[in-house]
Structures are given as C-alpha cells and as structure tokens.
Amino acid sequence: MPKTVSVRPEHLADRHRPMASLAGLLREWLPRQRWFAGKDRPVTDLSVLSSTELFPGCLHLLVHTGQTGVLTPAGIPSAGDCYQLLLGVREEPEPGLERAFIGQVREGSLAGFAVYDALHDTRSAELLLERLRRPGGAGPLCFEADPDTHVPGGLTPRLLDAEQSNSSLVYGDAYILKVFRRIQPGVNPDLEVPGALAAQGCTRVPAPVAWFRTTEPWPATLGVLQPFLPDADDGWTLALRALATGDDFTTQAHELGQATADIHLALAKAFGSGVHDGTGLTAEAMTARLEAAAHCVPALRSFVPGLRTAFGALTTCDAGPPAQRIHGDLHLGQVLRAGREWFVIDFEGEPSRPLAERRVAQSPVRDIAGMLRSFDYAARQRRPWRPEWARRCREAFCAGYAVRAGWDPRTKHALLRAHETDRAVYEVLYEARHRPDWLPVPMAAIERLAIWGG
Ligand SMILES: Nc1ncnc2c1ncn2[C@@H]1O[C@H](COP(=O)(O)OP(=O)(O)O)[C@@H](O)[C@H]1O
Ligand SMILES: [Mg+2]
Image 1: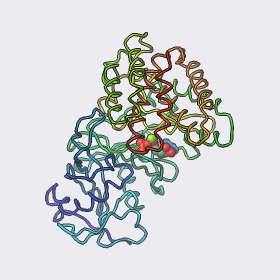
Image 2: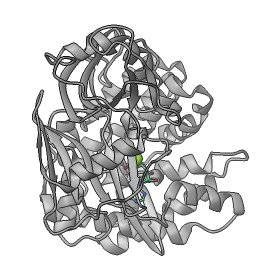
Image 3: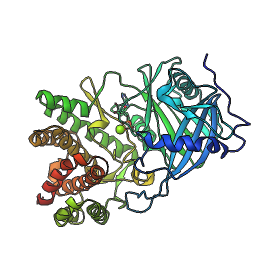
C-alpha cells in the first residue's frame, strides 16, 4: 500500500503556506507542461489562490503565475494566468510514478515529502472519479452530477497522451474527464454548451454527466466528465490517413459540413440568435490584430494592404447569417468520427481569449472558416503540398453545410474571406512564435487571401 499523507493542518496552516514548500519545484515544472501557456519565459511570480485537501495525500491548488514580458493577444502585458494543479504528496518517492514526479520538497512545512502530478497516479485518479460520483462540497470546490446518469464505480483510469491544452483521464473506456488547466472566472463553455445542446436533443456531442467547480478565488468551472467514444478517430488523423493513402475524403467532408450545420442549428435554438455585439470581431478589431501580427512578423507586411480590404467586407457586404453561439475553435482535431457519424467536442473556444468574449454571439462563418483552414493545414502536412485536396474538401464541406443549414457558405465569400484571413493571421503569429518551420503554411493562405478579390 503506497504511503500517502494528510497534508493538514500543520502543513497548510494558511492558504499561502504550500508555496513556501512548492514554489521552487513548480517554477521549474510548470513551464515544462504541455498545457502551460507561457513556456518560453520563466515564471517570475507564483502564488496560491485556493488550496484544498481533496482527499488524504491529494492537494488541489489554484495558482497564479506571472511572467514578465508576456503579452496578451491584444498586445498588452499579461496580468498572469491561473492554473489548476492536483498534487499528490507522499512521504517517499513512489516507484512506477517517475513520469508524474514533480520533485522532493526541500523547504517549508512539506520539506522531505515527494510531490506528484496526481492525475498520473492511478489511485488519485480513482478517488477523483469517486468524488465526482458523489455530489457534494470540499472547501470551495463543488462536485455536481446529472441526476439521470449513473456512473459506475471501479472504472480503471488512464491519462490521455494526446496533444492537449488540458489534461484528460479516460475511465474504463466509458467516460472521459477533462481537467481544465488554465482557469478563468465564469462558466466554461465546454460544460455549458454540450449540456445545452444535449437538452435540445442534439446527439452530435457527448453530454456532460458530472463536473466540478470552485467558488474561490472566483466562481469557475474546473472539470467535466462525459461519455467516451471508444472507437472514434479524430478528423485530423482521418484526414492525414486519407492524404497518405490517396483515399477520397470528400464524402467525410460533406458529412462534416452537415454535422457542423446541425451543431449551429442546435446552438441557435439553445441560446438564440441575433446581432453580434461587436466584441473582438469587427473590421477594426481584425485590422488591429493584423497590424500587431505584421509588426512581429516581417513576412506579413507586404500583404497588409491586400488583407485590410478583406476586413472591409465585414462592414460593407450583406451581414450574412445572424450572430449566435458558435464552437469558436473548430478544426479537424475537434471532431470525432465513430461509425459513420461525426461528433463535435471541445467547446472551450480559443483558450487565449477571455471567457466572456468566447461566450458572445458570433458569426457561424467563423467556425466554417476554421474548418476550411484546417483542411488546408492537413493538405500541407507533407510535400508535395496538395492544395487541390483542400479545395475539394472545402467544396464538399460547404455543400454539406448547405444541405442542412439552408444557406451555402460559398455564397458568403466576402465574409468567409474576412474570417479566414483573421484566422490565418492568428496562425502566422502562432507559427512565427512557436514553430517557425511551419510559417509557410499560413503564409500560403495569406498570399491567396490577399489577392483573392472576393
Ligand atoms: N468524448 C470523447 N470520446 C473520445 N475521445 C475524446 C472525447 N473527448 C475528447 N477525446 C479525445 O481527447 C482529445 C482532447 O480533447 P479536447 O476536448 O479537444 O481537449 P483539449 O481542450 O485539451 O484540446 C481529443 O482530441 C480526443 O482524441
Ligand atoms: Mg481540443
């Protein structure tokens, strides 16, 4: 039996105490985590926002991290981020948990203890599921569940090894728990939206069956449990496979267009539709993002005049479909195919944007543009590039969308161009910062969009 330890009360006399022990370890460990947003800069400020002993030997922390020199997407200095950590605390290092090991504490009240990322630890993951199965509180944390769903106990957990911005645990291939890492105040759309869609009878999303949230330092969603689709492949994997084998992908793209329209129709029914309030998606906002990106990426500069005309269309062309809640970060990695059906997951929206902005009504064309960009990314994974593959998928996707939605995205080409341009500008900035080898991929789109007259 592994030795676990209760870390209260002498170890955690007040909520700031854990940092006296953990700050050094976490400063090293956090920037190495895939889900940590500011990897390229050292953590200069680290403080505890909330600390709860979830069960003996497992400490739930919300920590604030500050990094000098980090800018928000709007180009202003970042006020820092809040991250959720579940730490296993043991008297001695545990064989078999090397991957989860954060370090041995050298100072403070936890000196001598071994600290782990508890999500890697089977025993802690099992206890977390038990906590979700029994609604109730733990300090500022609150565990809730859909009263109509019975989640069985004893399911074996495994931590998903996907390229993720959060951490997900799969339980017995029956459920998946997404533990949000970067926490913002408010309801996370990844809980709110699938719940609302399921209530509309939409079967294209796995609906939440249990979730947990906090009231401290402010109300926020922390994690969501939903059914796991065991035999599903994500759209990105399927697209690359089709590209590698030369198989047709237009049938899948057509069905994906239909699925996207179904989601949009259900979202409009659940949340209503109307006029966009302008947040973040006006021609001015997009132009400002373009100019900020061109400031950082010289290769973009000569295209700025051509791209600016794309955003002009937002004010001069017909308004397009009414604004409504959308997915917000739709691409091939956010759709799963099980059998012959497409399912849509990950309704968080663009994680770099504030939650409030992600929850406003926006043009559904934004999601369509996201998927079209994703076909282009897939087609440019390997040389020789296959832009004609992306073009065929794009046609098929739009045609499929039109079948269900009653309007064809291709008839809104000026709007589509504006949203694709905004997305490609974001990609250029991302690639320039994180994967310079990939910069030619969005730059090829930039070139097309700058001269594409609409
Ligand atoms: N309900 C599900 N069934 C099967 N696999 C899932 C499910 N939800 C998520 N996944 C898998 O987990 C991966 C990451 O999930 P996602 O919600 O997109 O998290 P993130 O916000 O970290 O991107 C997906 O790409 C998919 O492979
Ligand atoms: Mg995702």
